[in-house]
Structures are given as C-alpha cells and as structure tokens.
Image (cartoon, rainbow, N blue to C red; front, side, top):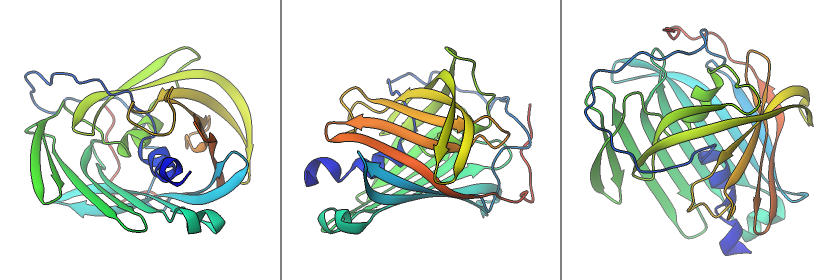
Length: 271
C-alpha cells in the first residue's frame, strides 16, 4: 500500500485538472488579452482547509491559500497548496508537500511555480519560471536547467485551478480549455461541466456545478484518470469537493473550513 498510496495526496492537489498532449507553440507574438470576471473571485487572505479521505478513512489534510507579493516588479497572487498526511497513515506514509505558484495579478497568468515533496527518506524540488513575453519556460531540477517554448498566457498546474475560477461556469455538456505547461509539456486543460448538485461538507451545504477533468496519464491516482470537482455557483467559485478513484479506492477531498480574502492593492483588468 505504501508504494501505491504515497503520491496520492500530492497529485490530488497539484494536478487539479489537465489532459496533456504535446502541442507546437508555433510563432508567438505579444501577450494577447483574455476574458475573465473582474473582480476575480479570490483575494489575498483566502484560505481553504480540506479533509482528505481514502475510502472512508481520513488520511490527511490539505490547505489552499492566497497571499500577495511582488515578483520582479510585478504584483502577483502567491498561491500556496500544502498537503500533509495525518494520524496512523502518517506513520506509514509521512507526506509533507508544498506547491507555490506566482500568478500575475493584472494578467492572471503564471510567472513561476515551486514544487517541494517531502517523504521519509527523500525530498524532491523543482522550480519553473515563465517568460510570458519571450514565451519560454526554464525548469530547474537537480541543479540542471532546461528551456521550453510555451504558448501565451500559459498557466501552471496550480494557477490553472484559480484561473478556471475566474471563468463563467459552463453549461452542462460544455467545456472550457486553458493552456498549461506541466511535466515539460505544453497542453490543454479541459474542463467539462456535468450537472448542478447540492453538496454537503463539514463546512456547510452548497449549490454547486460538478465538472469532470482528466489527470495526467502518468498519475498513480487512477488508470482512467477521471477527476471530479464541485465548484460553488456563487461569485467565489469555491472548490468544495474533489474526488477520483484509484486502485486502492475512492480518494475524496472535502472542504472543512474556509476564510475569504480581502481586496488586493491591485486588481486584475478584464478585457
């Protein structure tokens, strides 16, 4: 069980939704405008806490929070995702993972992502920076740098979830597609709306829209790669429930508490 379950919590939060197929960037120009809701539905100070369950057993906690900072002269949302195993499960599989994404506060695209995975005997780290003008991504891993071409306004695996929250929820059967760079590939994040549902979690009862996405093929979560997220239909677009099926059972992430953020000093400009 240890070998199979150890990465589950990490992938569940790090890869909210993506189907990666290698695509050619082609000839890129300047950063084009993009449409989104303004003001955006999240703000510095926002904090979501989740219970993570394997079948009916609680195996960990997850936290997603938003801060505000300056990166290379740009005001950015500092997006943070943390996952830790807990209880008896933490004795078998000690997990302490942290993902940090720096999302442009004005243009809502990614500038940088930092990934740190801690296990009992191993720590893995990776940093990817995004040049959104020159359309290049530089990945630093194991003291080696590698450069990739990227499409305009590309998102990383964490910022993509927040960017989706700025989009109007699609009607049942409709899809939203977002450019993303992950695992040394450019691809499309495809999110398909399924239905409206009333969902109850430890944080309360919410009217939601259920969407379906696909995890990367290399993810150990599921051979099918199907991943479901329930977003609230209010102006906050809160992901209150996430669920997928692995070979060891159903992985469920339930919102247990939430705190709203406050308006940042610089707001995004909608086009």
